Image (cartoon, rainbow, N blue to C red):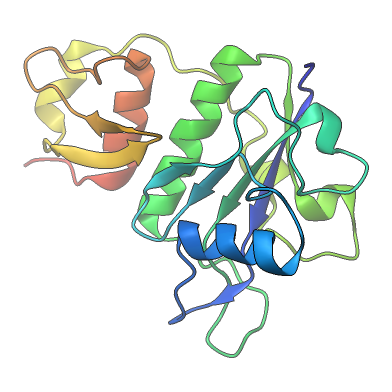
Length: 193
C-alpha cells in the first residue's frame, strides 16, 4: 500500500495512570469493535516501542486517512488533572524520533503530522508534531569519532520483537540502520566527562 503520512497520536492517558500496550489493544478490541489495536506502533512511557498492526494492514486511528498512513501513539498526553499536555518522557522522545527516522528510511516521502493537523477538533498528540519533526530524516551512518563523548547504554528500547542494543565495539544496533543508534544515545544519555 502507498504510505504518505505518519500520524502521531497520544493515548489521552493522564500522568500517573498506566495504559500499557496490551491495555490499549484490549480497549480497541472490546470497546471500539476493532479486530486489533488501531495503531501500527505504541510507545510506552519507558520508551519501549511496541509493534501493533502490521505495516501492510490499514490502521484505525485517523478518520479519512487510515488507508494511506501509519499510526504511531505514545502513552500519555494528559497532565494529572486530565488536561491536554505534552507528557512525553525523554525515553519516549528518543524512541519516537528513532522510530520516525527508521520509517522515513522505508517511506522517504511520507509527511509526519499530529492527529490534530488532520482533525483540528482534536488536541492529540498534545504537541506540534509537524513542527517538531519537520526536518526529520534518516541520519547518516554513525560516525565513530562521536563514540568517546557518549556514555554507553546497553538497553535502549524494544522494537517489535527485537531489542535495540548498543554494540560498544562497532557503535551500532545490529539489524537496524546505524544512524538509529546515534539518535537514541544522543537523546537518552549524558555526555561523558
